[in-house]
Structure formats: C-alpha cells, structure tokens
Picture (cartoon, rainbow, N blue to C red):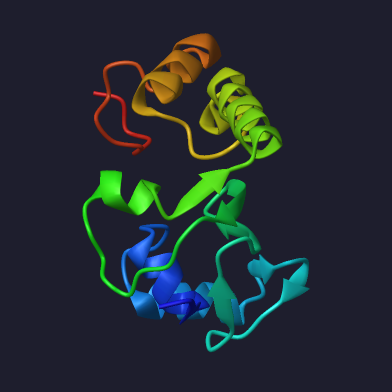
Length: 139
C-alpha cells in the first residue's frame, strides 16, 4: 500500500480517536498536507508533510509510512516523525500553559461567597441587632 486517505491515516497514526473526529477536523481546515488545506479523501504517501491541530497543540509531522489498521501506540509512532521545530514549539506552549495563572483567580466581580457576605455585614455593622424581624415594634 503506497497511498491512503488522510482521515484513515490520522486515525491509524492515533492523532484522533475516531475517523469521524479526523474528518471533522479536516473539514474545519485544521489539517494541511504539503501546505494545502485538504478534504478527507485526500491521499497521503510517505514523504508528505502534515500540519495538524489537535486541541491547543499544533504539530508538523512527516509521513514515514501508511497503514489502514489502527495498531498500538508504538506501532503508530512508526508511521510519522515529528519535526524538531514542532517538538520545540509544543514544549514551549506546554510550559507557557503551565506557568499561566489560573483564570478564575483573576475574577474580581461576581456573586460573593458566604464568607464575603458575612465579612461585609461585619464591616457595615449589624443594624438589626438581635431582632428577628423588620417590624417597628420594640419589645
């Protein structure tokens, strides 16, 4: 076998869990072969360059072989070779995500927590005292 559909190859090389996920990503324009946006039926052969986006990561790989059967991860790793530049960029992006602050910590507005509400009540002073209702009668 010299050529294989790109969606089958991406599935066999374990970039996507199912062929339908691979087709969806290809249809969204997230996969390029030799610098061109392709359709799922595009055939790839050994020596082709594939650029793909899987979640937040971008990868550039060179096709080393084709297989229409999905094997184990070590077998799938023999079907491609990732470029050194792609590995470096992926590692830098992972490090940047690791060092980025938690987005929820930057929120300064929103509904106060129970602790925040109690602290605010203490600062304002408790104007109701020990009364349990807002009625005017003072007993």
